[in-house]
Structures are given as C-alpha cells and as structure tokens.
Image (cartoon, rainbow, N blue to C red; front, side):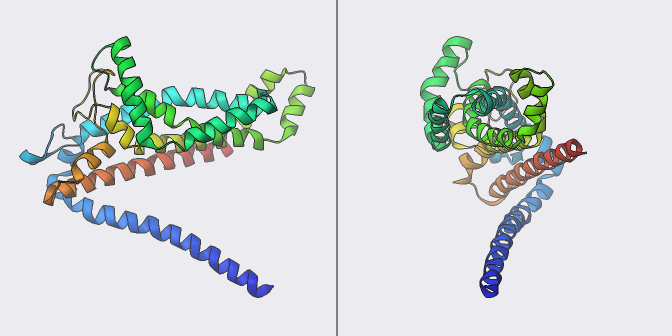
Length: 282
C-alpha cells in the first residue's frame, strides 16, 4: 500500500513538474527569440510605433495592441452580462428539466471549433452589422459580438459552479431574515461567489484576447488605429498568424516579439485577477 502511494505521489509530482517545465520552455523560447528583435527595432518604436510595414523595415505594433484591447473590451461588454445572468438563472431560477436542456446547449457551444464561429460570423454577423450599422461589416463591433458569443460557455460554466458551491446557509439565513428569493440571490449568494465568478471572467478574457481564426475572418485585418467601432482592426494574434508563413529574418523575429507582448498581456491579466482576489479575501 505504501509503495502504491509512493508511486502515485511520484506520478503526480512528475505531472506537476511537466506543467511547470512546459511554461518555462515557452517563456524561454519567446523571450530568447523576441527580446533581441525588440532591442534591435527599439522598444519604443516597436511597442508605440503606428506603422507595420515589414518591407520598409517598420515594425510598430501599437495599432495591433489597440485592436486587441478594443476587441477584447467589446467581447467583455457583450459576453460578461449575458454569461453571468445565464449562470444565475441556471443555478437559482431554472427548473431541473429545462436546466438539462440548456446546459447541454451551452456545452455544445463550447465544443464548436473557432473556424466554425468565424464562418458563422462571416456569413451572418458581418452582413447584419453592414446592413444595420453601416460600413463594410468587418469591424470591431463584429469581432466583439462574435468573441462575446465565444466566451459565453467559459463564463457560464465557471460562474454557475461558483454559485452552486456557496453554502446553503447563506441563502437560508437571508430568507430567515425576511429577504425575498431574488434579493437573497443577488445580495448574498452572488457576492459570496465573487471570487469564482471573477475567475470565469478572467478565463473568458484570456479566450478572447488569444482568439485568432475567428477574428481574422471578421475583423477586417487592417493594421491601423481605428477611429470607429465600424472600422476594421488587426489584433496581435491575427498579425502573427497572417504573416508568420512567409516571414524571415527580422520580420520573423518581430512576429515572435509580438507573441512576447501578448504573453505579457496575459500575465498582467492574471496578476490583476490575483490582486483583486486577494483584496476581496481580506
């Protein structure tokens, strides 16, 4: 028995070590290949430069940074309220029979490939935005709507699990004090599940900022700073995927450096979440 436990502990340790090693290898590859390019181009010119023209040796990724922020912010605006309200409905208001049907649909939504989402956005959302709001349809608004739809399963699943994990004593105590069902849910259960809900939102943000294929198909892929949500943009991920196939020398290294910036963005998002979580726990 002790031998079996020791073997299992060793297996678990190796799995954990492999996960850490994978992250370290990714970091090493990105920074080893990206930092020299940033140094050669110039950190200010690279991060804040507004022109991306590899043929003219201009590698400014500021338009892609702005595009990623705009699209991700739009996805949060559209996706978070809908996802959170859906999670609350599933957890506290939905009948058991309807819950199974709705939950199956959400799980199916999570399994749809991103290229299928992109094709749906290209065929349905792009014409809708073009006909209703104007422009050519491939825009920040279109990408935000599509990404907001794509992050729904993550936010709903994690938020519902967090709401269900709150002890029933919170709800029972609130009801005993005379609060209604709705008030107990929104004023007691929801704040108690705040940490898990924030985790779901952070995971959704990570999905949105890291999405590539769907964004390429609907965002317009224009490397410029937009002056309207109906204008096209190019995100950091789209910039890497579009040009990596034929990039060489400094151009290729600049694309890897773009990945470094994206990686730092993700780290900052996770760090911000941990700070908010720790402050909430205090």
